[in-house]
Length: 390
Image (cartoon, rainbow, N blue to C red; front, side, top):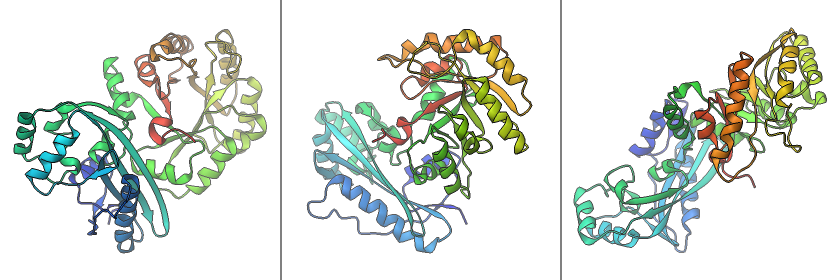
């Protein structure tokens, strides 16, 4: 019996999970899916996701059950699945030349534990004439599709823009970050597998991390030492297990919460901090992997050592018995254009090569492609995975 159950017969959702290499079992939830009078699209998507998970969960008490429901909304009107060609034609006529919303609710449930989220994507459809609409209706692709279309099929030609997650439109709100990394790596002649995605989960509850684990994410970055400790405890029995990285500034009195919990500490900026990590690691009989944070732009409000000080700090780390320096980390200055980060990422790559260091932690949501093109082995992404923090 699988540890993950998809409470949906949707072939598209199954394909997305399979593409990520996640084993799962399909147990459809047979429910009345009619919209309640006056029910808003977001409320409907959330209600149906909860109901599907709740319907299947009792029969699979030891598994995580995923319930999901996707609706197409034009203004506040829900466009369901057309029952016939005439309804499909009417929906396409309404969507043509306009912006609509695709809303997916999903619920991850195990026993009484429940995590619910709703994701909304904006889709712009090009103007369509009667001939184009008739040709699409004739293809039959509209059958069993909310809103009467499938973006991953023939109808893709009519979509002018997607703002938000493309996979949400397909039917499950998986982040598009991996695809962005893969495209950037291939442009630079690199293997996508050489780049690891660190999902920045700071301030997010353990349930969000668990949901991301089931979506195929493995590495998570935390900025606060005690939050890392608490979250690691809460997810101690999770399977698959998360790999924790500590990516924020670290005070010496908080080292005890990080050593041995974080696989990698990204932001070493002094020999004194490294010495405390070495002491704690020695007491636990382990070697702690770390990165040196470099303030390439010399921004006074940011942490990190100046470029000319990196060599001396790396030498000090290499003299320690229980700390292993694996590479460098940097944060580029905030800028309107991702290209503005390129000189900083390139400088970090050159500096790491001079010091014979392999790991480069650089790039975030807004500039990850540039970072990957310049050699990043670790990219730290939060909002593109979990949404903007409140």
